Image 1 (spheres, rainbow, N blue to C red):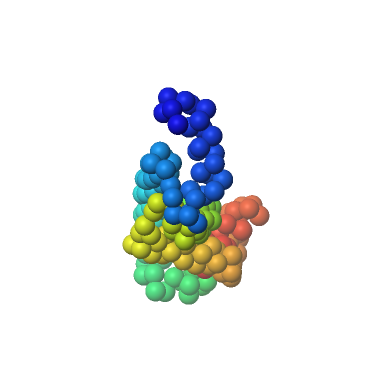
Image 2 (image 1 turned 60 degrees about the vertical axis):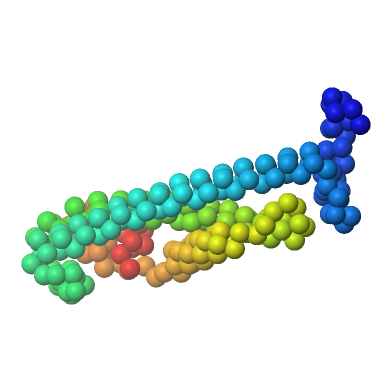
Length: 204
């Protein structure tokens, strides 16, 4: 074949793609080999970049949620004079004047935590679908011997992300709602139904 004949190269590429690189015969031409190899390497680099970005976003949201939770317990100590271990009994038996001091800041923090958890939920849903698809794809390509070696460490990393995502999504769906704060704060401030739903979902 004339190496400068673009049409012939295109035809051969199409034939190799249709035959999956002629895996049954074990024959692959050099051009097809390098094209597939480059594509697979580029895909793995893109997956790693996306994994790093995803982990950084989750890390940032986790720190923010931790900061807001610390604010919540700090607010309990400053208003009621008790630590977090007594939070439920303190809030339940609190006087209206103390709830007026406690609720505005707490409701704002709860709304922010709910927003962060909602974003985390969608990120975890994306992670579950994306990494599960990536694992299946790698196994299929490896089983077809398509110029790749199975990276066991990366597979286990992605399996770990899939499991973590599944557990987070399951927790978000199945967790019971706690109405303590919304019920007590509703007696001193106005709370919309959406705010009540977010607070009840956040305070569990």
